[in-house]
Image (cartoon, rainbow, N blue to C red; front, top):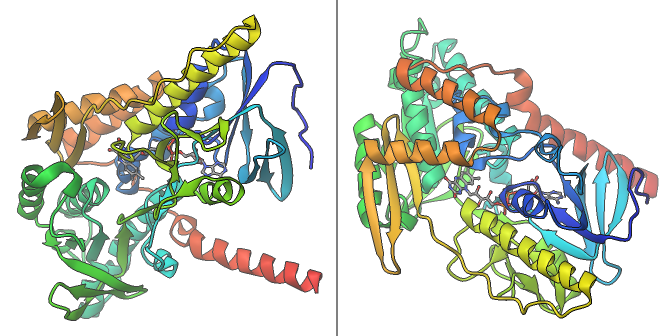
Length: 464
Ligand SMILES: Cc1cc2nc3c(=O)[nH]c(=O)nc-3n(C[C@H](O)[C@H](O)[C@H](O)COP(=O)(O)OP(=O)(O)OC[C@H]3O[C@@H](n4cnc5c(N)ncnc54)[C@H](O)[C@@H]3O)c2cc1C
């Protein structure tokens, strides 16, 4: 194990795992701190996950929501960005192991911030992923774009009405914000952008189904907004199926169990999974070495100061952490990152002056509300007014608020301008600028899995 390129100094070493909302904000908030930061992430970019569905449905390009972390931090000289998949944190030796192209690097830390986020959860049925990809990464979004547009292409070449019906049936599992946004966009893509562009099929006949085991759409946003979103989607032509639990997913469709116990099939070649999340397995790694506990979703149950029990220099933030009252949303991660950076700065200053640091105040989450787009010009939004009251609204003004907020939080001026232009194209003309698909996009997951199986078999053979 080695760490080439590392610059050894006597300064306090802060290692951050993850370049998402939590990790990036923590690093940026430490800009003027007298510390050495190493930000290790498995991707070279900072990903704005809330707009992944627009990449999947051809509105914007992947570059618009995934600027390189290295360039974002270019002028921050106390930060070094390192590419690598973190496989282990050793709490005793205070080191982090990360792997890049088969080589393991060991990085020492004085303070560690874990912000590795969460992945898709299939509730113990990981084999569903092959036929119903989730939407957590750029790879996922491009694969879904390939599958959605690929289904239309195959339908155009099919003379079998049953097969055409299956190809033109799109099922989105999970009626949370991502599911609602995805279903609405597949419907608009079929009805508006693709309309008239095929000769054998009519894309407007595509059947989009949004399905959930829960009895409501958008449960975290409450009954009123859930109903608004449901009505709008139904008006657009999306079929909503509630109290419907998916029991199996295969190449040709899904099997569903309804509330009354009856089992039925939906034949569909393109399925999207947006039903659950599972925190990074690094939480389990911490729990195995300390008194740290994790919840059912794999989230680390942190102390009020976001550190873990017995290790005040190890913080867990964002989607990886369980903090009562803090939702798994971008704001939770952003505010957690800034809070932890403030503690590090305060304690480092005290260390340098040989004084006692100010005691740590517990992390306080400021709820800025939540919103979800349903279709072009239409969104639902919830803004808290004080402790108990919430201002809820839907329609065009909610959509404008959604647009403004997303522009504010996108990282980088160029990114904001490019996204605004893409939105103008789509919203004003019904066209989409990013409808390119490649064979690799649509089939890469299966091929990568095959390659991984071959590599594992070779390793096993060598070992025996
Ligand atoms: C499709 C979708 C839509 C969403 N929409 C909204 C929305 O509208 N509003 C909202 O507030 N929130 C939304 N969210 C939730 C929001 O994106 C997350 O809450 C937020 O990203 C959490 O930030 P994080 O820093 O904890 O994790 P992430 O942003 O997920 O970042 C995790 C980072 O860790 C890296 N990483 C993971 N494992 C490793 C490893 N082993 N080694 C090295 N690096 C690793 C990843 O590459 C990534 O850089 C959405 C999420 C998704 C998936």
